Image (tube, rainbow, N blue to C red):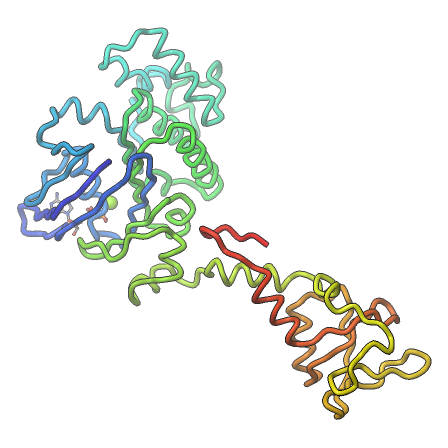
Amino acid sequence: MIEFKGVHKTYPDGTEAIKDFNLKVQEGELLTLIGPSGCGKTTTMKMINRLVEPTAGEIYIDGRQLKDYSIHELRWNIGYVLQQIALFPHMTVEENIAVVPEMKKWKKKEIHDRAKELMRMVGMEPSIYLKKKPSELSGGQAQRVGVIRALAADPQILLMDEPFSALDPISREGLQKDIRKLQRQIKKTIVFVTHDIDEATALGDRICLMNAGEIIQVDTPQKLILEPRDSFVRSFIGDKKSPWQTAIDIVAAQSVSHILTQTAYEAGDFDPDQAYILTSDDGQLLCAVEHGKQQNVLAVPSDMNVLEAVHTFEEAGANILPVTKGEELIATVTQQELLRYLAGKTEVRNGVVTQ
Ligand SMILES: Nc1ncnc2c1ncn2[C@@H]1O[C@H](COP(=O)(O)OP(=O)(O)O)[C@@H](O)[C@H]1O
Ligand SMILES: [Mg+2]
């Protein structure tokens, strides 16, 4: 667990980079740090591995103050991945991966096995790639090696500072998937800096949104979208749809036939004081009748989706419409039934849409 308590950082030139920063990153959590350029993301990261010292406040790892750790202990237990991965160019991929484990005096075989295991985790065949030099890798492959090099000595914490921002969208998406998979397997505490809200919501258990050295909101992606604290958060998130909106879209795209079981129509089986559909003897639709008044009738084909059916109701100006299959009248549907369906059929739990 990483904890910031009342942390400030003012650089020697007077720049106030971090102001009263209070944050707990839980064990095994992936927290994304996001905010505009210059808001203090990199400074926050560098304070965790003491590349930068706070001017006030304390930082704890597992309840122990950072200054009580030796620098070696700290650096070896914290993997650090930067935007521009600096692999050592004269070393092979395997030698690059081995740097920290060798410092930690791991055995050669242990290091080799670990390198192979990690390469497989990110989909790079060890027998091909371990022997290559960094110049023989694509940008995406080099970045993967950078990530697993940071993981090689099994650090507790992984800091990633815009690690994928220099990559093309396809490599980037692939690496995001790798990170999610790795996170499930290895359960590290990860702080991941990005300036891309899509990346932040895709990866983060929680998102910490910063502005001008301060935390504006720390929440799960769903909460950030549903309950933005202020207009800054709202504008940063942009026009992301809420899970509820997504759920409604999904339900609305289903066909009207989903509702029919409740409203199966039987000829003659209606209450004349209520609403019904009047047909001619040969089955032609004549009109809708509501409280004795005739209304327009438009057919709702049973495979029409719920949203289109809502529009059909608007167009007809009626509260009841016939549902047809081909030429045949098979049911009626009312506006209330549509509404009940939209309102009651959908549940959102932890942002997962279930129906
Ligand atoms: N070594 C430094 N000396 C002085 N100012 C710095 C230094 N490093 C960063 N800053 C300033 O601190 C603020 C936060 O920078 P940084 O943490 O790099 O932001 P971010 O990573 O969010 O873009 C910026 O105003 C930046 O110019
Ligand atoms: Mg930065």
